Picture 1 (cartoon, rainbow, N blue to C red):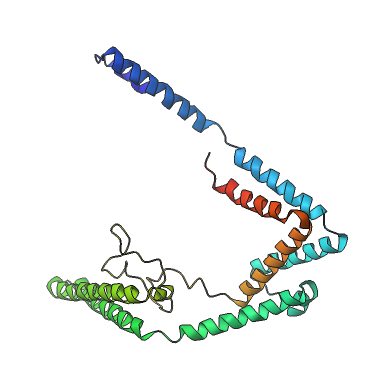
Picture 2 (cartoon, one colour):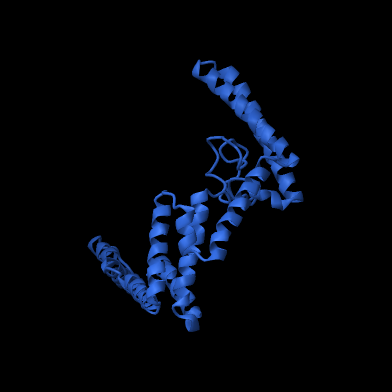
Length: 266
């Protein structure tokens, strides 16, 4: 509407058809703007409703199960805060299988750490190119800071050339063995418009790298506390499901709705 009125004030001569179209557009935009100002509480209502259903499921547990659930939730909160929970306490409130799962998953973590120390030969060449490119770039920065820009340019060019070599090696490596993607710190796409490029910032790093350009740590690696938290979390979910064994499907749907409530855009 504001745009329509502005054109009227400017006394711009519009055809009746154009005037009608602008008026309709103004009405639509005005309604849209008014809707944006209205507080949207639908997702909160959905979340509250799903939480009430979860609470009802808790009520279906026996007194002993509710006590166990409270203990498990207390331990989970303690682990989330980074505080250890003794094995004796875990063994008391977890089932035998659940407690053994902690040790089994931790052994898997130890094996994974052992594997990560043995970098595949195919990746060593790529890593070496990156190291050389970084070395040449640092030399260029040193000369540049001293005002020797012509010399610095030579090292910048060498670094850029090495980055291009590294990118070619990376393409060849992943073409023949896509499984090696798990060794890198980010998703890799060679399509146009991706973040991948022949420079030190854009080129992916190995998950074992100590480079400041590495994006996060290996998501597969977990601490002992994280392993414990994962097992305790699953035990909590299992116990909640047992409160309504005849309607486990409904429980899964409720948890999905809780997530959807946060993600839905009104």
